[in-house]
Amino acid sequence: MSSASTLDELARAVERLREQNRQLTEHVTDLEADLQETDARVDTLEAENETLRDETERLRDRLGDCETTTERLEAATDATRKRSGANKERIEELQARELEKGAHLRAANVDRCDLELATDHLERLTKDDGRAYYRLPESEDPLDRGDSVSLAHGDLLPIQQLARMDDEMRRSTTNALPTRLAAKLWKARSDPDVGDNPWRQGCKTVREYVKASDLKHWIRRQESGVSDAYAKKLVSRTIDALLDLSKHRLAVRKQTERKNGLSYTERRVLLPTDADLPGDQPAGSPETADVHG
Image (cartoon, rainbow, N blue to C red; front, side, top):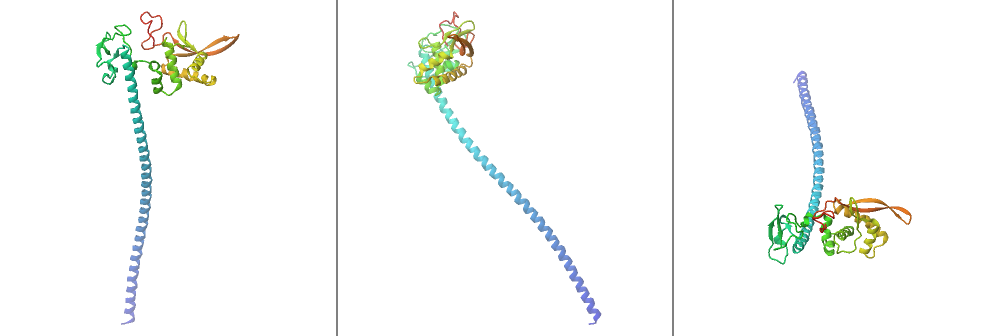
């Protein structure tokens, strides 16, 4: 083979090698680009995975909170159901007592099947107001008014409801001493048989009132062992309970007093003459002079 032929062959071989090298270089470049894209995709997926993990953890926390809230609500519902049952029993006991005293109660407010009465049935009657009522057989309306009624327990103000209870039932209804004192104070005002009554007759726009100082001494007579300092605190709390339970039918005013030549300001709890008390009218009304709220 001549030298020229050999050189030509070598030149072609070198050219082929160059082409292969170029192709390999391009392929490596493509692979590097694919690798970079894959790395970027992996980074994106890892970030998304981390976000999903965080979201999953947050949802687990929310699920735990929801389960805790559900358990709390179930417990509260169960407690409310028990209290409602106990209150229903108390109301039914009060209704039975009132019926046995001759009261006429609105039929809509009475579950007659659950009342424990000496008689085996109640009479249903319709009064002049067009409403239906229950009473014990042949029980006359204690108010002796054909167009009126003896109010059902639910028609009364909270203070009137509590005042109608005996001490044991009142204690089972509330464990707040100021509330019980407020109820006893109201009963002392409206029930002449109580005896220890710190209320005083008012004039003009005030039907009755009680002084804070008289209320303090009354509290100490009602609760043996109460100190003078604690009785002062109970006066304020009892007044607050009176206002709340009477739905603010009562009012509190400050009055300037004089004693031993000195002036001082004292609070008074007032029952206005125009106070709207269910089943009660201001003293002096000819139709209701003997009715007490």
